[in-house]
Image (cartoon, rainbow, N blue to C red; front, side, top):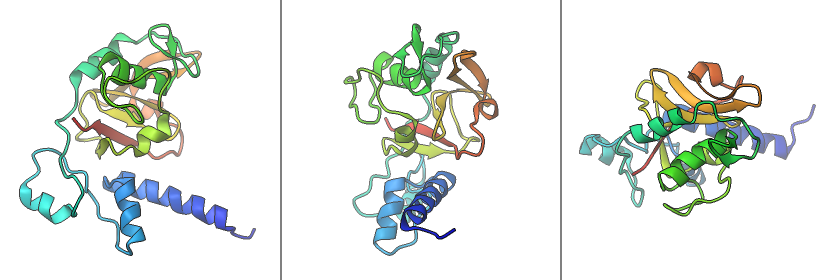
Amino acid sequence: MPVTAGKLAVASLGTLLAWSGIRGASITGSIRDLINGNAPVAGRNLIAGTPASVIEAGGSAGESTIGPVGGNSVIADSALGYIGTPYVWGGASPPNGCDCSGLCNAIIGRDHSLAIPGFPSGRFSGHGPVTTQWFAWTGCITVTQVTAQPGDIVVWLSHMGIYVGGGQMVSSLNTRLGTLKTSIAGAAPAGEPMRIRRLKQ
């Protein structure tokens, strides 16, 4: 089967997304590096408290290296309060019904008036962004599962939820199960790359 330009572009984008997720680099930073003919730099999005010497070594001119303040246990507590909410595709009205991204958008954007992809603080309405937007949004940084904190967002290309600690997350799964607390591994779509995103505050 001949390789077309479209197939090559899709494969390249998938490789860039996977590399960025594994290395903790921003998608936009990686693309900018490649356009400029440089190798992508890992770990541009540094966690708060990183020594200045590390920030100076990894940052670049004009790019913010201010990290997040950490997880947000209030977001995790809100997610736990919505366990039992029915799954409704396209829904964003917990406890009445929501899908996975609708649940996260409602908790973060509506309940806590925080910025989410495409909506500044306090301006969220409707369903809001989908999983792929959360996967690449520059308003978050990517952290490892070892450093995940309650309130972080666990996101794949087709599913997402709120991390509540102990390797567990709350997400709206499907019409049969609704919104549950499960292990991250138990919610993982087969073969999809995962990112744990932490809101920049």
